[in-house]
Length: 397
Ligand SMILES: [Zn+2]
Image (cartoon, rainbow, N blue to C red; front, top):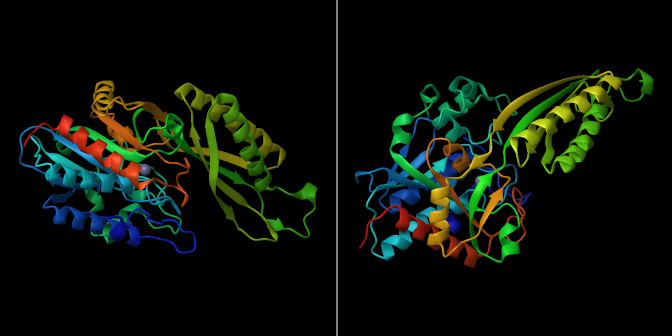
């Protein structure tokens, strides 16, 4: 499976992946998913929000156990974030079948659409739409860096954007969701374990800071005559770091857009996106309030304007305790640990019991080509997922 998936969306220049939602590379990944399902005789259905589901025993009674993850990536992302969960799901089906096991209730392998939000700015768009946590009107109007609307990108891919919206009929068919994912930190390295079970996801959100100033000549405009929004932005980056440390939180500016973006021009506008995460919702809220105030004061000194827009906000997610404990026990007392990363499992947790399995990442690095997992650990992950399916979806020989 890795051999056929790895070339898709691979960037030779960076050594990473560019599988942005509804791009050519993403469509190739979706076709790969369909082919893998077909090879196993699984029925693929695409829901109204573009999420793919490969069903094993769709006609069986009872609610389905869903497993899976996503195939899209951040810009120059690693090979494992997302795909490890999808590949492990197909591999777990293979393992169970080799064992002569068959489910007593339906199993569905999911490939959630647009998990990373790399192209249109909203993370977990597919699962948010499915569960009614993203307004379809707003989703359709989201635009990428080239001004292409999400609705148009989906339509070009043969998907009806008017169908977007909550899908209670589908959610009612799913009893639980278990997502296997590469760990995006070094928790399991320190615990010296290959696989762990997630406890919670930190609350997190994205904010756009628009600093406005006045474009002017870099060579003829006196320092005291400038209205330079880059200065306000630079100050805000440093303030974010300071305030994150003070709150035991994380704050990152990883993306900016500068106008006119000329080497010899003072910028007229700097738009910057802040990714904020904290152990509690209160800590995240005060981090943002303090940062916005500091940025505003600085912008005033620079003669710049500032507007701050919250683009997404995800509350703290406590994974289902009963499911978590049952999985940890099934996996021979696997360790439990929290994460600062958002996942579709966190979005679905608002509607159905969900759990996550993490596979050790020796470097702890993620969202980068340096993201790694040992083959032996991936195999432990597959067998852990197979054991989880066996435990949760009944059945027998
Ligand atoms: Zn992921």
